[in-house]
Image: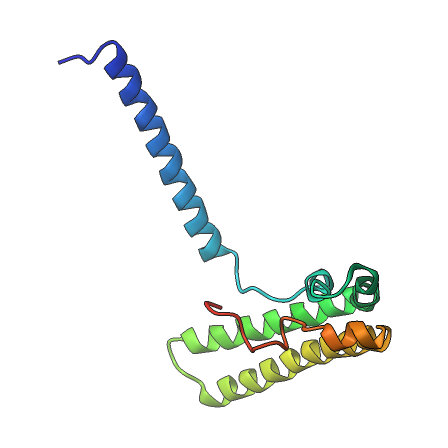
Length: 149
């Protein structure tokens, strides 16, 4: 049986659309799987400044931009410590002492990165007019973690 005419073109169009949708879903799934953990980068100064009036945003952006290279270094150190802890968790033989040490290192590296973010937030706040500061609600401090993350 051969399909011809309009039905053939309609079927071909549907097959192409189906293939495109499947590739899109596969790409999204692969991206989520292989992308690694999400971490805050220096570019987050823009999103943290988002709740501010436009004229006050630059102070927060600058505070994060100045710390960008160091923040990226600290985030990379946190990621490395996290990967080391994960390696130890997945090892055939669980070395509890090494795992405890890896978790302690991870906490320290994470704290180092958070301290720098907090320093940038404090500097940004120092350079804001009191009215803008009173209205500012950085997402990371307003209501805890986001849902689904």
